[in-house]
Length: 155
Ligand SMILES: CC(C)(COP(=O)(O)OP(=O)(O)OC[C@H]1O[C@@H](n2cnc3c(N)ncnc32)[C@H](O)[C@@H]1OP(=O)(O)O)[C@@H](O)C(=O)NCCC(=O)NCCS
Image: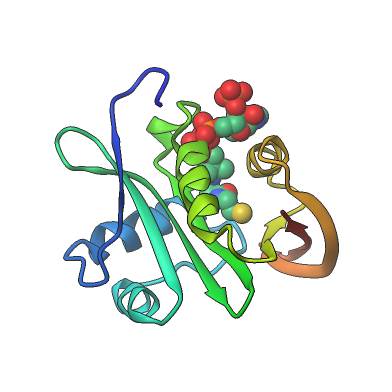
């Protein structure tokens, strides 16, 4: 449940009409952070792919506050992206989205994700959910002229 703001969490329909809202929020969260941000078509393809599942968090006025997308292949799953609107952060939105996704992916033997070593909010969130480091990709993200390692976390 949210602490201070009201929102509902739902599965993102494969034929969702709000890919534009997804790509806009993705860009807000990842532009300049060394990660590629995805356009409308990327989301259309991703959500249409076998094994992909996403959850969105929307406010009463139907505006998008956050979303998470994961994918299962055989008995392994991956969290592909997670983002929350800056003004909606620290309300439990990401944790709620992650818990829904983890429940859905839980038949998998393991759930993996990648996170930049510099991303303290995300690292704190994943740690609170029980993720543990299982690897490291040196210089995986590009930020300006420097490179940042990615940690591979596993649940
Ligand atoms: C990381 C992100 C998704 C967190 O979203 P959020 O909705 O603010 O997170 P929550 O409110 O659910 O936080 C749950 C817990 O995670 C930890 N946490 C989240 N943000 C934190 C921060 N800025 N500082 C410290 N801990 C933080 C806390 O333990 C928090 O619990 P608490 O609020 O009771 O202390 C959000 O900051 C974001 O969209 N960042 C940009 C995109 C991104 O980095 N995505 C992850 C890529 S791997």
